[in-house]
Length: 174
Image (cartoon, rainbow, N blue to C red; front, side, top):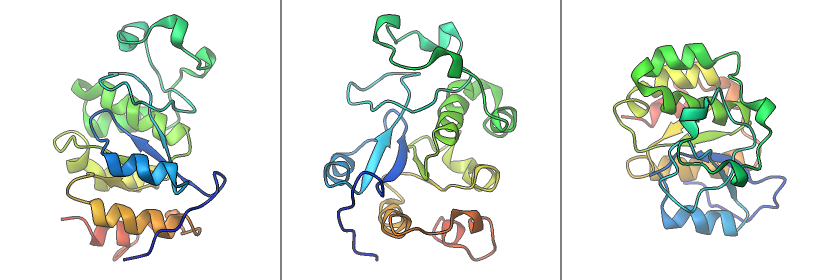
């Protein structure tokens, strides 16, 4: 396992943390400057959300738990990336908000994605990782792999090779 050391904000690993995937250790990693947590309040189950840099193709009814006056986001940025339709195909149209989360992570330049959604996201992570170039972790099952990734990513690992046979991204997932 790679030993994690504090980093400045410029080298902190940008981590998209879907609602419900948070754990107190993530807050500690963020306070120590090793990661920067982001999300977008499509479902807004937690008051500890951290803003995403870019929202995806959200529609007004996708923001049902967001007060317009509280939005500090660029509304013009509410468009899907070039991968949004492929993401939606992979996770399924019934999981539209999951696709919004994933696309927001991609648009925001996140280095990895945390989710406890085994059926719609984690079970499809191989396809998503190959499409988007960053790994997906379940914070309970993959915690050690996530810590290894953060330790390696904070010193500049190459995410472009995530889809190569034998890569760490795929070899650590069961």
